[in-house]
Length: 283
Image 1 (cartoon, rainbow, N blue to C red):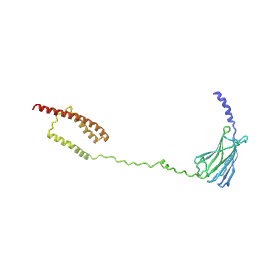
Image 2 (cartoon, rainbow, N blue to C red):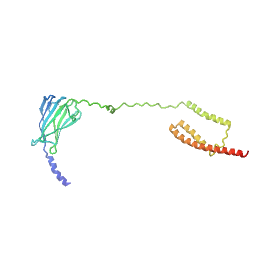
Image 3 (tube, one colour):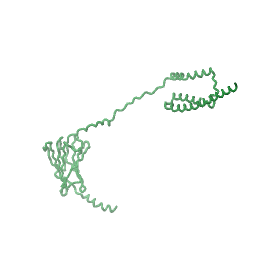
Image 4 (cartoon, rainbow, N blue to C red):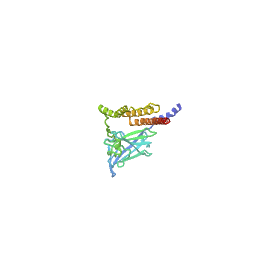
């Protein structure tokens, strides 16, 4: 680390004693579209001109100067030279490079008929024009030259899709009002209508006194329970279940009822065959 510090000391000392750059014979002129000179003045590096430089839509600004070493007045070609156009009102700025010859002489032209893309959008406020110089062997320098008034920029053309990037009106959703339960007497009326076939069936069964000795047998009881399960699922669907739920549960219960029903029918057939055989043997 000490060795590197030893090597950097001469560079730091050279930077501390670097020469300064200056600008000699700065001058601007404004030409009309016909080449007639509208205004021409030398520039001072200590203060800006009181009157801003104004350019029309077809005018041309010409700027000439020489970059020299301040101590020796020798022409110098900086590594970087820029003109900065700055709008204090909007904060917009543009940077335009300037070519400088080996002797330090520079010439810049700004034709408002074909303005460069680096020129910022202009408004009512003038643009502050500054000269920026950068070099590896000299201290960087900045010189305020003049205020520049140019024609106001036209608004940019509207993109066909620009409207899609703006907030749209809020979408107003219209929802169906919540369903209301019917009055109690209406619900009870339809409940009795649904239950009435069962009441009639129970009444008729009581009149005929049906004999079902095998209702609770091992082969018939599962089928009876599966039918009761289907009826309970239908009642549950009427009270709470959704259509998808009843289709899922009902399909399982139906398969169960089909299997147990087949077993019950097979058992009933066996009982009938045994009964017929018994009658034939005793005749």
